Amino acid sequence: MNQKVVNDFSITVGTVNGSGSSTANNTILRAIFKMGIPVSGKNLFPSNIQGQPTWYTIRVNKDGFVGRDESHEIVVAMNPASFARDLADVAPGGAFYYADDIKQAITRSDIAVYAMPIKQLIREQTEVPANLRDLVGNMVYVGILAQMIGMDIEKIHAALDFHFKHREKPTMMNYNAVKAGADWAKTNLTKTDPFVLEPMTKTDGMIMADGNTAAALGAIYGGVQFVGWYPITPATSLAESLNDYLPTLRKRDDGKHTYAVVQAEDELAALGMSIGAGWGGLRAMTSTSGPGLSLMTEFAGLAYYAEVPVVIWDVQRIGPSTGLPTRTSQGDLTFVAFIGHGDSQSVILLPGNVYECFEFGWKAFDLAERLQTPIFVLSDLDIGMNQWMSKPFDYPSTPMDRGKILREEDIEALKGNWGRYLDKDGDGIPYRTLPGNRHPMSAYFTRGTGHDEQARYTEEAPVFTRVLERLKKKHKTAKQYVPAPILHETREAEVGILAYGSTESAVQEARAQLAASGFKSSLMRVRALPFSNEVGKFLEKYDQIVVVEMNRDGQMYQLLCVDYPALAPKLRSVAFQDGLPASAKWIREGILSVVKKAAPKKEATPKKAVAKPSLKSKKPVKKSTVKKGAKK
Image 1 (cartoon, one colour):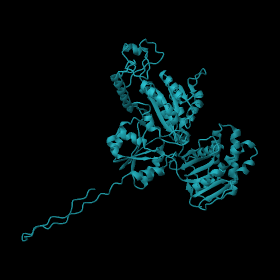
Image 2: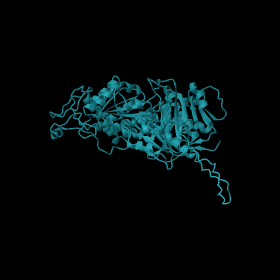
Image 3: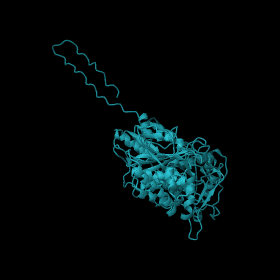
Image 4: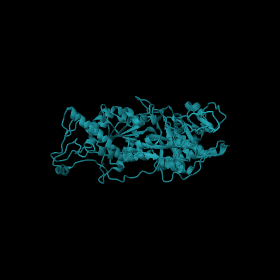
């Protein structure tokens, strides 16, 4: 066996969609996490219900880089249909585990190969009912892998206990299958590959969660009162998580609930309900993905122009049209930035990790009510549905910001001198009243048609222009409220990298790889639109700015060029979309392909010495023929 490779490899399990492998793969993931080793899990699954190939990749990295790695050091093949592909994917020097009932040729001699008698071992587990053998049989490969790479079997038990919510019977039935696999491997297999796990302490104090669950918890702690939604991959689990946690976390002492979750007949209705609730003073939201957001466009424009607070989560997937429903993307950015017909500008939050999904879950409500506008939160499938390490979520430490709401006594003090769409403070944000306000001057008519400052219907051109200009001013005001970008600066960096969303882990790994070869860069991760002042300062600081994103056309790059046209010549786009999460490899190679290397500075060529004229000489002195230094 070669020299050990410790805590730095990927494990990919190839199975069949709907075969029950999810429990087994999540058990491996959580057991490694419980060993204190940085880890992440990514599920590559088809958009059908069952029967097609699916892969689950677990990235182990002692340095904490847990974005997607394009290399597959350990592959577990459980699906005959993908066997040849799985075998070909194993990195040279890697390990290939396969169920021995798959009778296909092994054509490689540069990897370690281990056959696993999965069906035989599960038949020997007499406490497993016949109808559950295929499901529980997945635990056999968990045990074999545990024995071969040094996974702590007690951590596996703890992971199973967590998964089955401390129910002893299913926990022990699955754990016994794990032990059977581990015992068989100990007796029958000789390890010839170098990949092993060793305990660390780098996950101490951390949790594992997916972004959709984090977003749901953030919304609950932000005071969500109404949710209108319609199922769509990959956003469905966000609403499902709300339904899971709200009954426990939002119940009064008398047993009554303080929320409503309504599954609408379609996405347009879901947003319409949420806008109605937001107009009524409730903290309201919906969640969807690209095709659903397309259907919501008309109502999004209404909320923008009528100035109704509402939160819209877009868990992005591949488009256009139905596209690839179970693949990830950052392809909705320009669509959302100008969603709706006519002149409109959206306020967008861009969470880059699971913790920010929680944080923006509650902050989005504050922003919606402060700015009286829809707040879009653009997550994606990679953050939303996959498991990530995170620091524990912090309960909001600031009071809810309800924005400019006038109550009876406020209107009385103003002596009625207010208008629903009147800018009294110069920030573009008007005051509003809520239904139930009993003051006779509180009422107004909410319109999606032309209206003046007092909400009266009008088609007068100057009035319409004033309203649109005020909305534009409000969008500029939003800069002071949205989350500021995160900056990672490097001394003597010559290139700036700008990224957003789920690419951060892969970008940081690419930066580390580039730094090892002497390429120094600084990173700014943008977390919101409109761009705050820090973004412009970052763009001005560096001669070259590389904009990294997961879409075909460089949508963030386009928006930066629109907002900073004078700085556009500095910008370089590294944009790519194939449905897979960003990897450090393509980011590194992309950066190197677009950055112009500075030409080495040439030293000035010394001029030839010119002889001083002799007092006796009558010959004229020739001028130097050395040309002036060439351009650097």
